[in-house]
Image 1: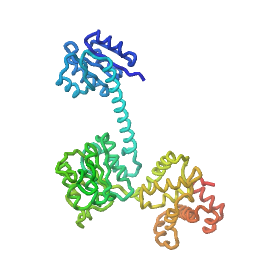
Image 2: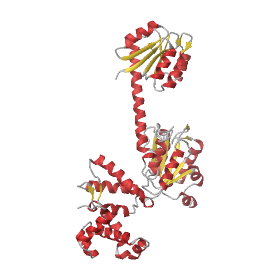
Image 3: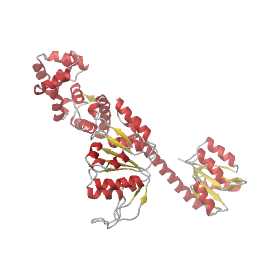
Amino acid sequence: MTKNLLIIDDEAAICSSLAFALEDEFLVQSTTDPFEGMEWVKQQSFDICLLDLKIGKIDGLEVLTELKRHQPELIVIIMTAYGSISSSVEAIKKGAYSYLTKPLHIEELLTLLGQALHVQKLNQQVEFLSQELEKKYGYQGMIGKTPVMKHVFQLIDKLKDIDTNVLITGESGTGKELVARGIHFSGKRKKEHFEVVNCAAIPETLLESELFGHEKGAFTGATSRREGKFLLANQGTIFLDEIGDMSVSLQAKLLRVLQQKEITPVGSDQTIKLDVRVIAATNRDLKQAVKLGEFRSDLFFRLNVVEIQLPPLRERKKDIPFLMHHFIHKYNQELGKNVKGFSPQALECLQNYDYPGNIRELANLIESAMVMSDSEYIRLEDLSKEVKQETTLSLNPENLEASIQQLVGLPLKEVERKVILATLAQYQGHRRKTAEVLGISERGLREKLKLYKGTIEE
């Protein structure tokens, strides 16, 4: 698409000659009146502006400021017959892309314009990718409608644009990294790096180097200089996952970094100042770890300025249907499937499961079931054996007393529904066996399923 170019120069001859030279490549508008040029910029969109530094008695730098105020993405190239280092530096500070001295050389100008348009395209791509990352990782995209999750979203909204240290706690698989990404990618640092360090997955001997970097020859195997995650995250965010597994000796070094806001690479005596947002996460009880001497109390209080507690999935089961819909949509795209939902038996089984692995386990179960399924609906036989066994334990005769306690206070129809569906799950959807065990006819079972689920899958 042809780009729009504006020329503002107090010499009409320069305006006309530049317009003639550039009209094959651009849609050109030119004026000798800077106020007219500024008015055009208010009313329409331009990609590039060639602006004279002195337009009569008007200072071109003031015009530059006004142009950028109305169109911040506008590429402005300053032209002047009185070039100086101080004026060029000032122009760049005010947002000019580059600086040319008259008389202009057309070939040089065309090369510069091509470079400017390339930079503009790259900036637009960066902005697009930033928006896509925000959509993907922004907290608005997290799934949850229960009050406890709404509270989590409110905390993220409050924390996204401030630099307070945050500690995210919760069981494995509850989405701690997703919350950290939500804070970063919806906040003021979203265009900078987000670096992740799993403190439990990296050997203690290498974790210090991973965090702070090292110099060549700092230790055996250090064949070259390496930047650590803190330096890579400068101006952005570093996420320290499983911080509770960090050794006490390294905790002391991390505390110094948080206090001094500077790092010293391994094998170096040079300190490097940093501006990094720190978010940590753990599935351990750090208060108990402090009491046991396994975690420094001063580091705990430094990290735990604000705590975000993520509940296990078993405590937010009303969110499970929404999560199921999300994962079906996701894996339909990734696996090239067209799964529409679950059979009543499979749905009941998944809703009764406790998910010790939380959201991560739910995602894996659904992906596995979709791989196994040959129909538009995931059936009971598509689910893993472990899930089916776990969800029928509550009605197993060996656990009868515990099962009865779970049914106390429920309406009889609800008790009947649970018994029928749990028995059906126990026999992997085989209706004849289920009917025989329950002492009813297959037709009676069919009518009960219609009553409790609205529809059944043939």
